[in-house]
Every structure is written in C-alpha cells, then in structure tokens.
Image (cartoon, rainbow, N blue to C red; front, side, top):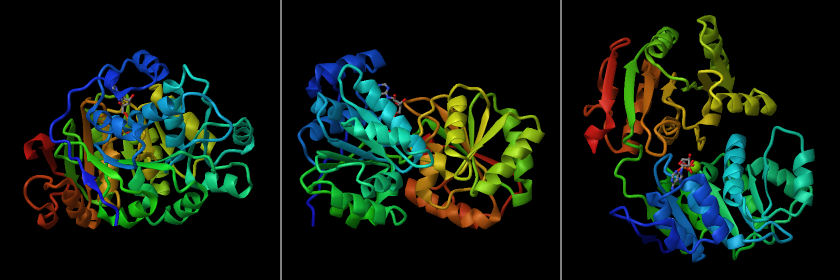
Length: 400
Ligand code: ADP
Ligand code: MG
C-alpha cells in the first residue's frame, strides 16, 4: 500500500509566487499573465511538485490547477532537450488545446517546445511537431497510443507524467489506455494527478500510477465552488424546451452552456433554440473536430450566446464569460454534475447553474447530494413529488 500523507491545508496559506523558487523565465511569464497571488491549490502544491514527489491534488473547479503543475514543470525543464520530458494527459481534445495554451503562456521566455496530440484531426501537423523534438506533450490517450504504436513518439525520457482530470482518466473507460501508456513511460518518473473530484473508487489505479504520493486537498468544505448559485426545476420531459426558452429569456448573458444527455438531443435542442431565434451552436462527438474547434473559438469570442453540449464540454474548459450552465438533462454521475456546473463561477467569479429534474432522472439527485455532502435544499428531493415546472432556488452558501 502506498503511504499517503494527508496535508489537508486547513487554512489558506498566505504566500506569494516568489517563495517557490520558480525559474526567472516562468516568473516573468507569470507577471505578464497578471497573476499576482497564487491560489490555494497553487500554494499547496508547487513546492511539492518541485521537490519531485508524486502528488494527488484536489481542488474545486476553476481554482487554477493547470498553473499549479504547468509552472513548476516549465521551471524544471528550463530549456529544450531532444526528447519529451513532460507528458500531460487529458480526457478531451479541447482540453488538450487549452492546457497547451497554458504551457505556451508560461514557457514564452524559454525555448521549450510543446504540442498537443489529439484525435479527430489529420496526423500531419502532429507528426511534424513530434519530429521536431518536443519537450512537453499534452495529449488525449487515444491519439497518443496511435503515435506510440507507429513509433512516432518516444516516451522513454519522460520525467513528469500529469493526469489532469485524473479521476476521469483512471475510470473504466480510459483505464486500459492509461495502462498502456504507463508501460511506456519510465517507472522512475514523477506522477501528478489533479481533479476537482477524486474519490476512493479510483484508489487502486492511483496506487498503480504513483509512489508515496502526497495528498493535497484544498481546504474549501464544498466540492463545488460557493460562487455558483445552484437552482433546480422539476419538469417533465416534454416541458423542457419551453422551460429552457423561459429560463434563457430571463437571463441577461452573452455565454450560456447547455448540457444534454446525448448527441442527438444536443442537436435537437440547438435546433429548437434556433427556431426561437436564439443564436445557438452545438458541440459533441458527432461534430467534426475542425468544427468543434471553430465553434469553441467563436464561443470564447462571444460570437453566439448559447452552446449546447454533451459531456465532452463538462471537464476542464476555462471560458470565463460563461455565466450560466443549464443542465437540460442531469448527467449520469454526480462528479459530472460538479464538473459541468464548474464551467461557470471560475477563478472567484460568480455563476449560476440551473438543472432540470425530470421524474426519470430523480434518482440521480441523491448521488449528486452525496458527492456534494449536502442536500440540494435541506430535505431529500428524491422523495418529493414533482411539482411540474416549479422553481426552487438554493444558495450553496447556506449549507457551508
Ligand atoms: P482548474 O483547472 O482548477 O479548473 P484553471 O487552471 O483552468 O482551473 O484556472 C481557472 C482560471 O483561473 C484560468 O482562467 C486561469 O488563468 C486563472 N488563474 C489561475 N491561477 C491564477 C492566479 N494565481 N491568479 C489569477 N488567475 C489565475
Ligand atoms: Mg483543470
């Protein structure tokens, strides 16, 4: 068994970035980025990462976990070498691009080379990047394995392996791929795992990937940020479209993210919105990767108001303008709920999450309550009769 040291930072440690012994290149990039103080999870992990220890870190969505690992990695690698030394695994293509952008931001005063290796696009550009001796590879497991089997990538010099959204990568869907990748990276490398939600269900996988990992949990009591105002509507399936239009009408926002259970439903909802003259786009696994990237860019730029998505957009995406997340359908798992609503209320901003609860999904409410550690309104929703479109409004602050 791995010995786990529970740090459980009980009070936010007041610190500055200067204490961490980061390289001067990284410090200059930080200043340019306008980061003045480290976030709690950054304060609690940067030193540990620099010391070379394995790490299992959890902190709320939007709390700056990317920089917590990207800064010490950029500082440690300093300058370019011949083979990749850092490998960052993420569950989605869009997240690979976003994490790559953070490495480019923090590495801008270095000659470190970084690239994203992900599926759905031609391999040409990625092959060219791999031939150019990369230092940092950010990848999704599928395409990375493709590159491994074609001998396009040599992972024998990897010094740091990061699993961002670790619980997702270690769950059953990705586990076989992760094990294959694990065989190709040196046993001696450092392993860092980050997520807003890591529980004991992935413990044995964590032990497969880490040695004597230090466990750091940000102190915040709630799994979900208190800056997110969570609302719940009981509605029957047929009333969802009308309710969505009504909710959207009351929202004065340039960026709303709507989640549906399936790809088909995402298309359906997008079309319904367009018919009602709402500028909407869709993003999910049936949309070509080029279109997904274009859509996301336009969304970031505020070119349309409502993005309808499946859970491909649930994890990691950092789009500060998103003011509202609407769960047209509840997600299948409670951790997906936490990640979905975490697309708003990031980095201390406020946000609103609105969830539609239909009879057939009412059982999911209990799971969500369990993960969040508090009931949605103080009484068990699961036994309450549906009120057919009634609105309940809860501020998570009340439950702290
Ligand atoms: P997480 O991975 O924890 O969900 P991200 O790493 O995506 O969060 O960061 C969320 C946002 O906070 C990003 O826009 C990022 O640029 C910003 N951010 C991170 N650290 C800091 C900091 N120390 N000061 C200011 N902004 C920060
Ligand atoms: Mg993240």
